[in-house]
Image (cartoon, rainbow, N blue to C red):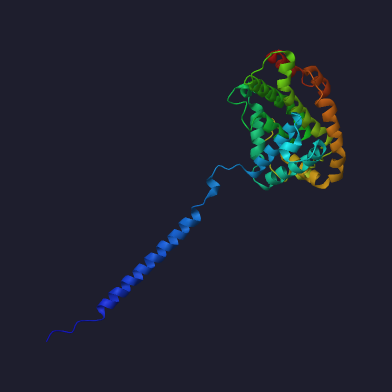
Length: 295
């Protein structure tokens, strides 16, 4: 008599196979979920931080002033007065984004390195159109440097800006090479510089720089190796605080800034007039640009 066939072995094997298959399926599913969670890693993409874009907006706004362009077409409305009043609020957007990030020292270091680059570097045809060149760094300085630091380094910034103007003018074909036509090419950049200089004077002349604020952020480098004062981080904090709490003062100062811009900066018709408006502080640099452009 043949031994009875075991009916329990097959189910046991099937059950084990099913369990293994189920475990593999769960593991594969878990792995798929993990892969899906890790896949959209946008942090690895080359995306500009928000504060960089905010600074570009301010740069473009000031360029519209410097080029005497209409605001109606490019910004959708408003005149010079409303846009000059908007400026501190745009600056606050940048300052808030920057201070909330961990890049204050990084931006200070970038500005310091910019001042160490020879001005002639920006006259090159492949450098004069860089979006983070002199135009960008001048606006960055407004947010990162105190008035004293600006006064100490503005000649270097103007030097780079004028070299950039030379580089860009070389890419522009003029029907004539008269003094007037050459000055027309650099006039917007002189006005741009003069406007930023006057913003310090008219809007932010009374920004306090307290020692308590200096300790909120570390300085970019030690005083022995940095050509920029260690109060720079404090300026960004102080400026943000001032804009946030000084609406009335800024509203009163804005018309004075606009009047200075329209009556003094926009009306310049020669390098000599620019020197008169700025107090003849940049004679050596202007002599350079006169020799470069034969103005």
